[in-house]
Image 1 (cartoon, rainbow, N blue to C red):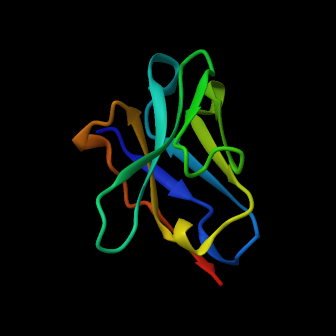
Image 2: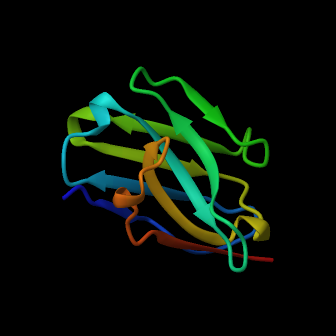
Image 3: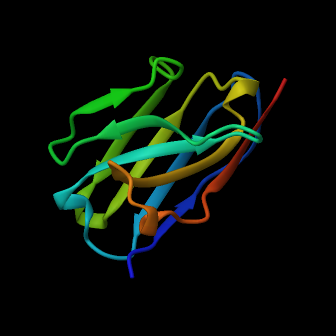
Length: 115
């Protein structure tokens, strides 16, 4: 069973930075585009950033210029470097393939940005 394990979340003040990591239980990264998603309280889950197997990236407009997605296929890991964080970035962050697959959702990691 494929399982995503997200880590690196926490509490940070506005303007601060966090680096999230996601490891998969199987070596799926080399064959799939991967994405970071987030879900804020009372809102639907939304796509934050995508990285292809060839490391091409794409970002949601609300994080462009602030967040950077990267991947390490040898370690089956992706990262999300988040800079200039805003209170509206507060959410649970998840990784999954892109497009996402229901069976691959993990527990996520909580990011809280205080004003």
